[in-house]
Length: 508
Image 1 (cartoon, rainbow, N blue to C red):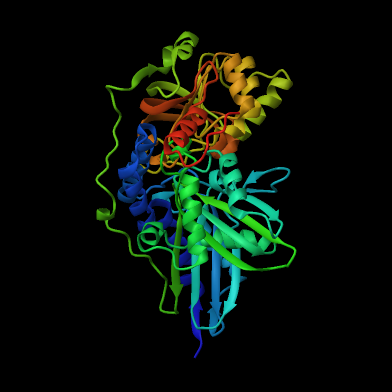
Image 2 (spheres, rainbow, N blue to C red):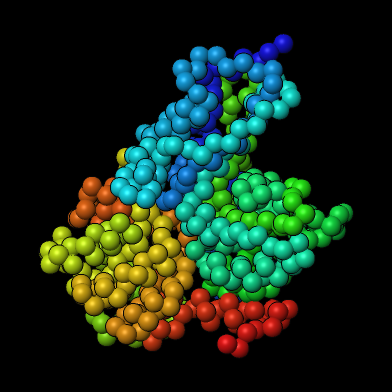
């Protein structure tokens, strides 16, 4: 007998799942991250993990997004052959998008609209995070199995693919490639690896593998039962031995798990895809059986460890952004922890491009950047009671191409983002005796609590990419690149790779 799936139930289930994953980490992730926290020996990495864990609990309690980047929606549907769809005015994909629209525009927990249509030219925000990316498979049975994930740009943009020769070493390629991914994917997280099929099949497998439960602790406890599990453990141990650590600061844990999926391939081929999942990993699984909408049971707050991060007022330097000088910036040292108070400006890719165009035309900028600090962020819209929604840092390397311009032509003296800076950004920082400060990715709700006032001061039409002015109180950051160009994302991993001692440290 056919199962009847009603349109309203399908839409509601998609929307509810997206709300759920915006503020609840999977319990397996929290358990493994808690173990990583307990075992972490790097003070900087341990502090970053503490912020991630504290932020996670705050989001679970407050039902607000774990990360400001609430992702591009990926939906995997396994549709039973004995299922009928009732009341669907258009396609299944249209129904998914209706669910996405409903989930992202929920008034009690608005999520950030991150999707731009016409990706090559206009790049205009769709304002409701549609369309989703939908994969469908027809299978035996009378249910609809649904997996929903929201992939952030920080992790998704670090996706890697290679077409290896059959005799090439997968391990060598992974170990060569992971350091090139930097820290913009916000470790500690997971790596999904797809091997075989065709290029697009390998990519799909890598992404789907990330939906599997994190079980590396149990796997290592009981030992491998097959070659795939042996490979997972070997990659897990070797990747962590690189010393990249939480947020790329250097430490013992870079990945919490490595997932591998395989498919037969052409005899002359070995396609390999690798996709990371970040510290704000977001995915959920439910089944529709015709009985109504599916709602996922919330986790218990007992699943979170007793970790409550707070600023260290004894260790950290207090900085007044309203009176900040170039001399003060030049005195900061790599690894210094700062607590920022006062007014800062914000700006991401689109704002920087518009500034570039305006400067080229000799036009006056809407704000004065002289002796100011810019925060790379695209915040979530606030709900009642908030000054601004979760406002975590954006991957800073995307702004490297604009850094020389901003430091030389606008009077800017400092920048805040997440992860490392590339060679062009570091050279501009060194040349102009500036500095780059890092906030913890995956701690967006926690960071937003330091923002006491927010207003749009330029490029309002850009939505979350507009220029804001934030008035902050004791916002926690770390000096990631100092005025001499020394980067903790270089020195930290090298130090911890050496301490771990399993992999020779490159001398060049």
